[in-house]
Length: 443
Image (cartoon, rainbow, N blue to C red; front, side, top):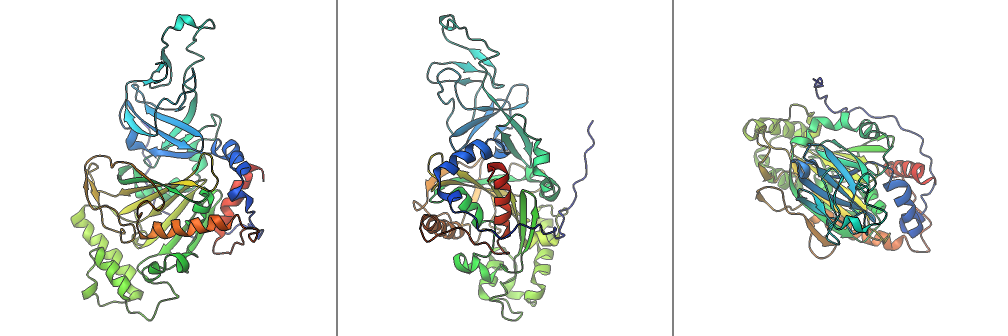
């Protein structure tokens, strides 16, 4: 029996600062169709990609399809209980076997000519097989595999069968995030929005807090966008942005501002009776949450107080960002459009921590939802996936602000007046991302 290693608490210490240089980041990376094709050949097909939540393939017969660029991949749980991944394409005439989404099936049957495969990808049946003069050898016509593995309650896939193991690729990330116990969280919200920008333009904005003053001015009153710790871990990175404390640019003495008071009330904190000030608020909010956990049943024992009162934001290269709070986790996945470098797919999944032993209780928590504006109430089973284009409906204040800004940025990237990106020290996660991007693209 494998020894179960105890979960260590998330490291808080500051990481060393590498020398990333000061070069301008070329604008062509965001707008050139040729770069888009190179990314498909050298980046998306060589990196570990977050494919989807493991809950979607919990039982034999479960499967889901996820897409990145022009590629489509099926992840399935076969009858032997093992996890498999395949390119979502029939070996006969290239029809896609399943549409994007999740489902349950005993096999994969092509809707074109009814070729059929088992859940482990092996060929099961070919109608009129004796009509093929070259034969239909099962060992040659199985579904083409991709590499799959799991970590953190998610399935990860890599199209490169000789790629390094997932845990090696993730590096420090599991040691940082295992304390959150993602696998015990419950998916409560799932949507995809088509945004009018390149996928890297989106990763960029979620990698820094420098834009808060211009794009999210409301947030300045409840979180600090200046005194933010930035840590670079090779391909991956994080920032720690304190919450329950105003930005130093709007902070006035120790009194709580009206926006902060309203935010506290939305979380159930007794702000009207609070005798302390900004200097003691984070400490007291953490104590309040731990006291409330005795009633809610949420287990914060593996989290530092800072993790209950700050946004711990992680980038996993190339296209996943996590906003982590004590009660909730937001997973944002930034996927390329299959043909247009000026568009992308923004995936938002929200997961709630639930009381121990109540993994099926999909309660849509109001905690830290002040700007997300999620639907409230209990969700029975998996929430339905929603898809829409930017502008068709609201995604909540924060994402509406980001999407509007990024649409303008993408237009500006095409201007003759744009020579490239001039990156500050505060924005160095963007430069760190591009250093890794360059290693894959050979730039």
